[in-house]
Amino acid sequence: MASALVSSAQAQTDRRLGFALVGLGSLSTNQIAPALQKTKQCRLAGIVTGTPAKEQIWADKYNIPRKNIYNYDNFDRIADNPDIDVVYVVLPNALHGEFTVRAAQAGKHVLCEKPMEVSARKCAEMIEACKKAKRRLAIGYRCQFTPHHLEMIRLAREKTFGEVKLIEASFGFRIGDPSQWRLKHELAGGGALMDVGIYALQAARYVSGEEPIEVFASETKTDKVKFKEVDESIAWSMRFPSGLMANCATTYLVGGMNRVLAAAEKGWFQLDPAYSYGGLKGKTSKQEMELPQIDHFAAEMDDFANCILKNKPTKVPGEEGLRDVKIMAAIYDSIRKGRPVRVA
Ligand code: NDP
Image 1 (cartoon, helix red, strand yellow):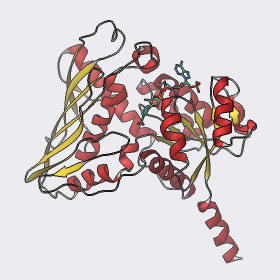
Image 2 (cartoon, helix red, strand yellow):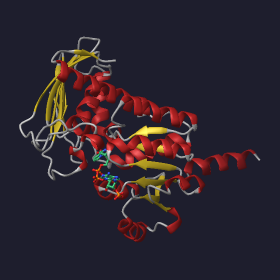
Image 3 (tube, helix red, strand yellow):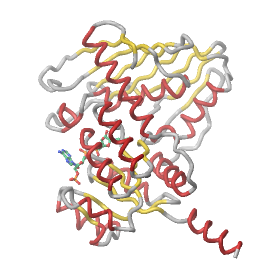
Image 4 (cartoon, helix red, strand yellow):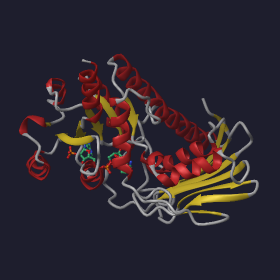
């Protein structure tokens, strides 16, 4: 009896959780679906798409049964589908809230892409819906699962080079197609900051191990037509309780800014590139970091599945996404006011 119980508990934790991807755009197609094939505890079980032409392509490529294919209207029927354990929301930012809430109400755990949503109010609704449904919610902060970022955190926590005093973090790229949703405020909620500046913000937070108490930001817009609705380039600083400062920047105008540097009392450590899907490079004032490259998305999804199966907390819960959205709101507020702003 006891051994039967042990083996049934083992079978439960060895199980692969069924993931359904919502929104089959670039990230789902090129990163997440291929990553799912490399996971140990997950499998691509279903899809949710608003583009009928994608249904057959995905069904054929990933062997997805017809009954596990949904669109945005009939999505709520996923409640009756035991093949799906986790819904992974990979939609434009301002749709994350609606689909997270609907997934939770359908009894599914939710992994939601960054940024969590476009307002703190929407993030709070997502957290509440998952709590009410007793389902897990995690945000797709893939970098937190990579050996390189974990090493940055270790060097800071263990004070290998003494106390970290200053951090520089930046991420930007040259955005193409002027008609895409990323340039529409209603769908994106913001521009470069919400899209990629969030990586620099995250890195400053987890490397410092502190929460910023004040931000001071300014922006520049050289293309007022393309960036009519969202921010183009922002530089901001953050002050932390210990006195540590972080200088950060983001842009949609040029590539090449992709790093985090921590300057400590007796040396420094950095990643450059820091936030790409692969090929991360780390270095300290003493030596190069020799660390394996991994699939960030496979690690992120396996971690979430593991948390669900073993009933452990995730290190990237909704509260973590909400914190970033609040800090980004303070950054926009600082730009409007032209002065430092306290973070709520
Ligand atoms: P895409 O534009 O490539 O894809 C978005 C998909 O969402 C579309 O293909 C479409 O899928 C669906 N969709 C539903 N409604 C709309 C709408 N009104 N406008 C446009 N698309 C719609 O975006 P990405 O895949 O690059 O980004 C999706 C999310 O993932 C974003 O939140 C982004 O911030 C995040 N992301 C995270 C990254 C990371 O490294 N963690 C990297 C890149 C993006 P369908 O046709 O199936 O309905």
